[in-house]
Length: 296
Image (cartoon, rainbow, N blue to C red):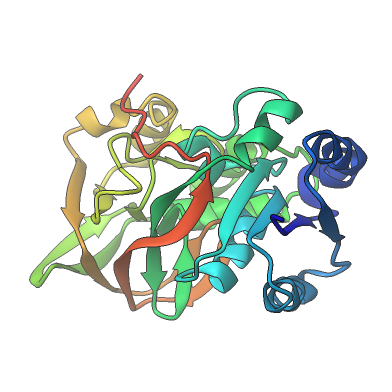
């Protein structure tokens, strides 16, 4: 019999994960799937709880939460045969959105979490696995600010954080090395993306695929504050890529030399410099669709 564990983030989506726990377990019971529930009370417990579940012999782990919880799960399950199912109830849900897992109601999402798995690429940033993107510059500051806000929650927090950080924005000098080719840029933002979305539904790299063995690198150049704001308003559709100071590159190994924080999946990864690589097919995602959304 299939052995499944349910991992809940009690804080995700302002407590939504726990509010739907009984319903998810009822759905699984109707589908004749036996599960055990994992409910860590603190973020520091998550990886240990997952490892204990893996050691017990599970086939599938279903994560009920947002990008942060999925990031922690991936850092345990990467390069194993265990399947990760995703029921998105977090703030951004960008990984689920990129794989078509955020649509439909709870029944459909639970069914997808039990569906056949697809191989999905991951980012390896130094020693950390990342599912969506690694960011530095202005979006890293916005992401940090959004996570610190008590109100509003959800995608609106990114809008508020953008407006709060905009007066502080100043382009910086970075040296990039893409598959061995080095060059210097003055940029407001550098984003290394495995998937199309970041920041709660913005298409920072609309053609990024989670299965092509390449990372998309978006460089937003030396733009002024209001020009940057106008560009970010277009990121929802991916139309920012038409801006003359926005460049998109593809590479499998990227080095970024500069100063400042770097973040991935909404989590702090450290500070520059950083080496970032693609890890092809490193995680098995139930019901995932690797097709990039494109613009629009």
